[in-house]
Each structure stands twice: as structure tokens, then as C-alpha cells.
Image (tube, rainbow, N blue to C red):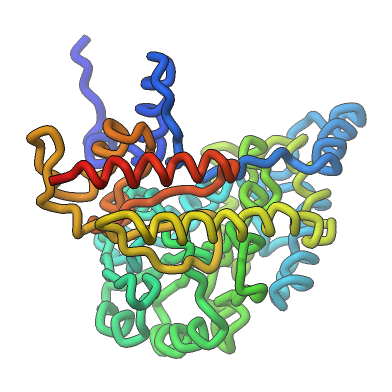
Length: 398
């Protein structure tokens, strides 16, 4: 049989974060001491209360199919969380629980975007946004941002990008990969632009909500006139260190939630029943329970910003959330290592893997090709060693 795959598959790019993590594992398997700062996963364990809730669910035989959008308990817990933490009023029929926030995002895009529709992606954006839009036949419209503005889209840039074909705007705050956080006033300024365009649905990805060093989270749906035209995406992976449990969710107007429920019913049905029980326990808990993890990330951020600011060719800003730094490394373009010229961020990432044995991710995958992303979800001593290796390697460049 001829190994022919679909045209859709051939249009898609492999996840750059997963690809770099695979390369790092391959080198480790060869006995090379690689420090991987490529994947976005907390290096903390799931809190005991969530683990016990999962164990209890097993013992209580909560091991059967659940409703496609989630059990009544978890949807009620999500509604309570939205009201408590975000000032958002949703009813259980406006909530859909999925196998990770990635599926939540795919559900929304596949439910709303037709071939030829434009989807605005402020760059840098999470790697899968663009590919999910391609799956739906949509046209990604990338809006560049600058490190001088902390990689935040300006209202005038948003307005200039909108056309009659614009169907959606997708962004994250706190942002993966930049760590940028939109303040209340900045969110309000973007909302003022979006309210004037009735066809546009805003997808606000808030998966890093709890890892926020501003101590105040601003939800787009809480802005006047935005609830009706916003889908709020969240989950338990990042804030509760539950990446492997795989659970994300949306809050949305009823018609959008119903559409996502229909899509999900044909692809996966409901997420794991055990995961739903554990996630419900997380959402019912006081968010302060993860403050120790947030404090550790705040300390690590300081280590990374200070250390990388002294690396030749690195321009670093102060991220206000998530657990990434996103330095501009364009000053390294044109420099050489062992006779090879660094032409772009892809080359820089490969150079750091080869010369420093540190795995990072090229910013090209995030729509910002002058940058690289480094995760600081690692122990302090690991981060300090990674910084030292990167510094030594960059000082070898000619």
C-alpha cells in the first residue's frame, strides 16, 4: 500500500514544543546531560486532596460514562469557580468539560469557523492556535507585537486587523509563551474595539490564571458587553499541576456551549470520569492552596530574568505570569558557531541544544521568529546551571 496521508495532515505542522522535547529525550537516551526547558509543565506533583478525590471516585465506582459535557458536580463546581474568581455568571448548560484545554479550543474553533473565515492571533501565540485554525479551514491573521510593549497587542493594531471576514480573536492571558498578563485597563481597551463588531467571537484562554504575579486576573467576558461574545477557556493542568489528568473546560453563551457539546459528542464524548472527580475537588478548593507553587515560580522568574539579561545577545523583559521567559535573540542572528551561521531563532534553539545541552523552543512556532521560549518549571539549581551553560555557549559565538 502506498503510504499516502490526507492533505489536511500535510498542511499541519508538528508541535514545536513536543518536537524539541523529543529531541532532548533522544539525546538523554544517548547519555548526554541535557537540561530541558522546552515543555510547559509544572514540576510539582498534584496536591494530595485531588489525588484522594480520584482514588475515592474509583472506590465509589464512578467509572462509567458521564454526560458528554461533564458530570453535574464538575459543571456546578466550574460555575461556582467562575463566579467566585472571575465575576462571571454561567449555568451548567453553558459549561463544557473536555479532555484538556486543547480540546476545548478545538471544539470552539470547529464549531464557529468556516473555511475562509479569518482568526486574529496576536503574536506570540500558543503553538496549537494556528494549527487548529487550519484544521477548520480558517485563515490565521497574525498581529506582531514587540518586547518593548511586553508582547501585548495594542487596540489600534487590533482594529486595523479586523475585516468583514474576521470571525474570531484568540489570545491567552497570562500568555504562553511570553508570560504577559493583560491588566484590567488593557483588557477594557481591547473590549472597546471588539464590542463594535458583532460577528467576532473572542476566545480568552485563561489556563495560566492562577500563575499570575500581578495578583489580579482580568477576564475578557467580565468586560461590559463581552459576555455574550466571549468564550472563556480554562482547566486544571497548570494551576493545580494536573497536566496528566487531562481536563479543560469552557464557559460560553448557551448556543456556543451546545455547539461544542455536539462536536465533542462525535469525537471523544466526556473526559475520564475519575479525572472529573479530581478536577471538581480542585475547583471546589480555595485557590490559595497552590500559593506555594506560585511563590516558587515567582522566585524562579527572578533567577531567569536576572541571569539571562547578562547573556550576550539576549534582550529580556519581565513576564508577569505563567512560567516562561521569551527573550529576543535577534542580536545573535548572523553570528557563527563552528563555521555555521545562525540565521534565525530555529538555528539559535538548535545551537543551544548542541553547544549548551539546553533545550528551548524557537519563537517561530509562536509567531515571533526573533525570540526563543524557555520554561522555568524546574528546580532553582537546574535553572542556574542552564543559564551558565547558555552564557558560556553564547560567548563562543563569532
